[in-house]
Each structure stands twice: as structure tokens, then as C-alpha cells.
Image (cartoon, rainbow, N blue to C red; front, side, top):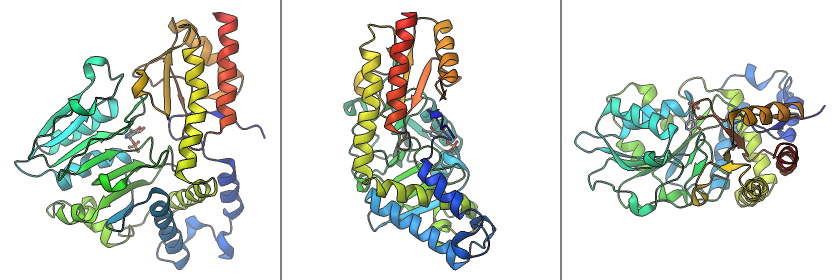
Length: 361
Ligand SMILES: Cc1ncc(COP(=O)(O)O)c(C=O)c1O
């Protein structure tokens, strides 16, 4: 079988080794005579999957003891609402950094719940950069500061984070979790839909400091309270068991490749191939994000005309590339290079870009 050069933005590439391991265990998980999907989520075998996925995430990302690792449902989009429902307090605005389409969605949901203040915005720059830390103004009575560590659509990424003192820093890391080492203790909460860097869709990871779980509102429905899920080890209701299982395999794969620092190095090597091709094209390819805000996960670029971009996508598809069309809201081109995208796919794309320029430049 020929594997596609998969640059999808999410759901996205999963390593072949992980897929093959899942295939091997698909029908008969550990000799149980049934698949993981057919098994009670209260069974010892599933509990082991749930616990080992949590433990591996803690180990790989250096999650401190006083944090919970939760596996929830509803995608990162549900977190846009669940976060303010739990932590936006009366008389204490939630501060948001506005860096693009995903931050905008998070802001919109928070406004449905309470007072929101924009701590910094790069809207005037068409979201083609992240703000300098000195631009971020946090009210001293803020409930929390929220930012989107990687804007999947615009292709920008924070390369350093504000220090927020007693105000909890909350990050939507849907598109860059586990792509680089971070000091988790600097964040009050991190959340991410799994379908980019952690495996398949269907499960959302929430890493949250214990004091924030305790501080969460008790007057919202039980399913929306972080405390409910923390208390029950993410087994309050039926979990997305197959997705959690796939995340556990993906985490084992990251560990086997040397962990998060190795992912970081690999992601740098991969994206350099493509950014160099853009920068050395004499303007034939134009990178969208400003240089110091460029994402190591989503490379966004444009060409002189939309016709040329369409031709690029069409020809790339004929050569086995998938997912290079930009998001429908912004157009252009985008290559998503998450952890599971191999270096060889990026080499192939850099070569294709050079060849396409030769023929059309
Ligand atoms: C940065 C970011 N946040 C949130 C989301 C929404 O995630 P979900 O589809 O899991 O709700 C996405 C999806 O692409 C994303 O890229």
C-alpha cells in the first residue's frame, strides 16, 4: 500500500506503526475475545488503558502531581464554553489574547458566560503574528488569561509565554500539544482536541491544576464541571474508549521516538525544509505568518494568483499529497506538519515545491 503524503490539518496523520498495532489488536484485545470497543469501561483492561494513557501523558509532558489529566468529550469547542462556565467569576473579567479564528471562537463563547476583556489583539495585522509579551495587558482582577498557543488556520505560534503570576494562564493547545517541551507548571490549564498531535478525534485532553478544579462553579450541570471528571478519573460517564486507547498508543509511539524533545527537533527539521523552500523562492511562494511568529505545526503560504494556487493543489494531489489547500476562511495553502508527519513527507513536499516553481515560475 502507498501511504499518502498526509498534510491534513485535523483529523491528521497517525504513524503507520500505531495504525498497525491497533489493527493487530482490533478484533481481539489482549486475548479478551473482544475488541476494546466492545468492552465495559469499568473493566480492568479498559481501566489499564485509561490509567496508562494518563500516566504516559504525565511522564512525557512533565505534568506536576497537583494537576489532573482528564479525557473529555465534545472537542476543544466544548472547552471554549466549559472553561468560562467553571472559572469566569462574577466581577472578575476573563482576559483573552486574540490571535485568530480559534481565539475568536473561544472569546465568543466566553462572552456568552460573562465579562471578557481583550488583553492583546493582532487582528489589525490580519492575525499574521502573535503579540509581543509586552503588548499583553492583563487586568489585575482577571479570572484568568486565555491564549491559543498555535493558530491552526493562520499558521502562527507562541514561542514564549506570558508570566501571569496569580492569574491562571489557560492555553488552547489543540494544534501543538506535545510538539515541544513546555513548563506545564506555568499554566493553570491546558486543553487540546486529540485529532492533530495525539491521535484520533473523539477525545479532548484537559490538564488542570487541582486548585482550579476545586474553584470551579458548582452551580452548573455536573457534566460541565471539571470536578465531576476529576473525581471519577474521567469515568463519570461512558468515555470514548477507542479514542483514548488510540491516544495511549500514540503516546507510546512518542516515547519510543525519544519523547517530546525529540519531537521538537524533528518538527524543526521538518518545517525548515518547507520554510527554506518558501524563503528561497524569490517571492514565488510567500509565507503568510511573520517570521518570528511562524508555526512549526501549520505552514501557511500563498502564491501570486489563486489560479496558480489551485493548480498547485491539483498537481500535488496527483502526486499523492493530501491536505495542502488552505482553510476555507482564508484560502491560500497550508501544510500541517504535526508530530506524526514523517520527515520524508516534508522532503517530498519541498521537492515538489521546487519542481512546481521550475515549471511555473
Ligand atoms: C486551535 C484549535 N482550537 C480549537 C479547535 C476546535 O477543536 P474541535 O473540533 O475538537 O472542537 C481547533 C480545531 O481545528 C483548533 O485548531
